[in-house]
Image (tube, rainbow over all chains, first blue to last red; front, side):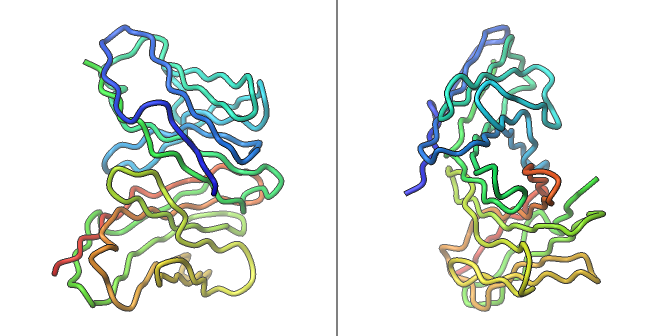
Length: 115
Length: 113
């Protein structure tokens, strides 16, 4: 069974802290994605990676960075957390070869609260 | 640029009634269209997708959607709602030029007993 796991379901951090969100997939997928989900806004793409050490900015990359040192793991980093980064963060993965037709598989999400 | 509009942030139906969730898209190239469902406290799960071929697409849990190019629509339907269908539903679009998905703002489906 396909599986995308995220390191934490709930996380509470303080303003200014450095925050790491980890995502691991076991499907040998090339593509991995980080989204944030906010009520009324749907899912917005923060960053995605199409290969190890390769990354591309999504629609809202400001305040975030990413790291992909191994194919199965994709990390989202908040260098200095701010209250407006309080949100649900979802990780997803997909194959690359299918282009836009491929299904993205999602993790359960991390609900981050920044105080 | 692609975009997706979901009409109605909340839809309420009685158990056993027809479910209709609306999705309209904007795309300058042939689109690929998806419906995802999110149950409470879970990630998103694919319900169905249209890529090419038959315009009526059947998905899991009795849902189906029809791609209508002339109306730029991809509405999701289910003949008879079940309590377990209560969830948030997202429509999304992509195309051949990218493997990124553009999501709509979501529709929360409430099912009344």
